[in-house]
Length: 322
Image 1 (cartoon, helix red, strand yellow):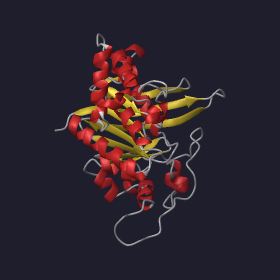
Image 2 (spheres, rainbow, N blue to C red; image 1 turned 180 degrees about the horizontal axis):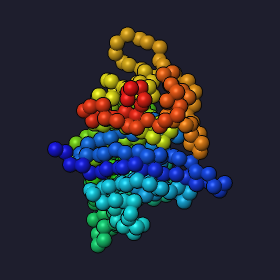
Image 3 (cartoon, helix red, strand yellow; image 1 turned 45 degrees about the vertical axis):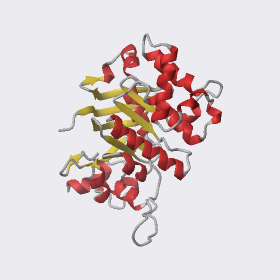
Image 4 (cartoon, rainbow, N blue to C red; image 1 turned 90 degrees about the vertical axis):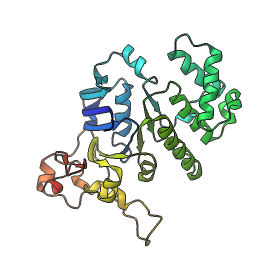
């Protein structure tokens, strides 16, 4: 049986405005991540994917607050940890590749020094020379020659910068890596290289991975399970192949239909009408019902429970419940 590394239960993260209103960015999500496995968080922009990741890292901005739920990492609830305790967990046990993070490298500091700084800050007693040697090894691990440890970020291509921030995320041998849109702004060739790298690292290092993206093809490259988010909630969750082959929630089905296939007969891509809802005042009942062609009165009135339809495939839809 696989070892369960992370358990998220009924996580709710709200942002509070000066007016007193709250943005229900994450509103009661639950999922698991097994040791050495990958989970994809998929959904449109603004659905709460990045907020969920920042909640796991306890790196929310001042206006954000976890109002309910548990984040169990190896059995310990991260929600209850102090900031000092979280500093010892971040990067050492859980690290994150932030969205657009390749632009966060300081152009005036050598790449090796930036990686070494992260190591020195967390590894007490390590010398600068040892940290730089570790930085060179990490660059080699992600496919960059170790001599480039003395280069500046402006001497790297976009793909090399992205490999560098992945190396930084691996600097302290974490057990879980969260990657937020790691291939944003990269061309398709470099994107394929980065995804291949992450898949290889996951297998080689037995990493657990959470991949955040709106692109279904990216998830299929590196993940075992997928959780589809809509308006701060998970509408479908389970084994990747099962969910893609047999999407039961209308939103998941729409995402699958909207993605072009490289095989089979050509077909017109599906475009989902409407827009995601306002999370300050979300719709009553199922949050997808204003855009759903199958919506009934019960969809407009009652929030559907997420139920197991068999084989660990979970769906939150009144149509499935019957």
